[in-house]
Image 1 (cartoon, rainbow, N blue to C red):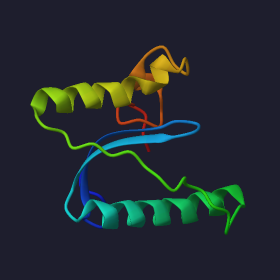
Image 2 (image 1 turned 90 degrees about the vertical axis):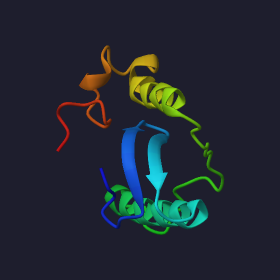
Image 3 (image 1 turned 180 degrees about the vertical axis):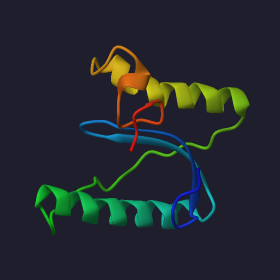
Image 4 (image 1 turned 30 degrees about the vertical axis):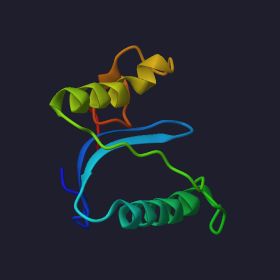
Length: 105
């Protein structure tokens, strides 16, 4: 799935109560992409939460270069199983805010 602005291809994701995981293939430099994603999502999240102007994201983020297909599949599974490991659902596909979900809007 290509991001709306064409800056990345989205492969898997999960939005957890206190963090986010995404598996993407960037089409621009990672620092530019990170700045863009954090800026756009912070603005929207703060608007939704009535916290406009409040710092939303931590300064640092963790990124990792995926080196092959087997590692890619392992990471995608880790991302989609995150809500199960956290005890939020019994099956990954039951968690609405994930690429594993069958009920996404």
